[in-house]
Picture 1 (tube, rainbow, N blue to C red):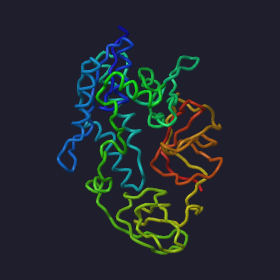
Picture 2: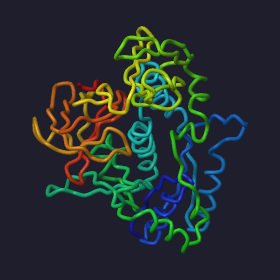
Picture 3: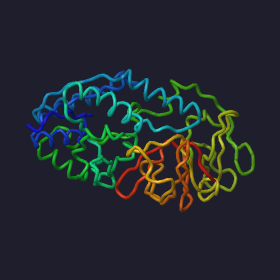
Picture 4: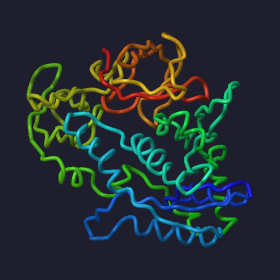
Length: 360
């Protein structure tokens, strides 16, 4: 046997194929389903129940034991509480990055080590590569369209040292084909989208249960004119176009969210897709996590992402006492406080930090 590996299984096809690959490679595989959220949906149905059943049936086909572990308290304390605090402060957080850092590769990793596992595997599309000194580095997934290294930017050297990403070198269509050949029950299961604890539910309806809505004015940032009313600042994000309900005013061009004033409860908007207010020349972060443990240099050029689905952009980075200052080679649209700025040197993910302020 190649050793014991715990696989975090979500009930989806990526983690299922990850477990299958490790089993075929001779590892002693344990499939574990993490329950991170206990609330039922609006119809009184626990949304994790179907995922758990899919995981159980998958493990039976692969021929591995399966277990479940409850991290609901840890998730509320370390992820959801931060999520609510950030939204209340007018920012737009990314709970998936925090979940990977605090739950999957922290609490769950500790659980795996207690079970005497040599490694923790997940279905992420990412890879681990060691440098000339043997230090593990986070590398993009082979499938550019599915690469999830952005969400893993908070991992440390110790975490990567015992992390395995079996599908990281594959393309999604090959993963599904492997699942079909093995007759896994999740081979055709639709990929999950959105924030994990909200799922397919309305974000507005869900979040309003935790943060009181406080209506206020929408103000044209160019003219100072009140052009509408918002339903609560936390319901809007920078760059948002849909759902503003003020079409037809002004020039007739679409309106976009450009700024939030939490103190005075004002949502600032602008009109026109090419309005200069929508574009920024850089950003600063509130701290920065370097996966290697240190910055490459005090100043350097690299590429960056400021949201998951964004294409890489060329940037110049200056390391500061409080994080980093990033200057864009070309102005970028809708840089959003609360999201993560993630840096790359070629295929290697250098790390990430929470966007604090856009730079005009």
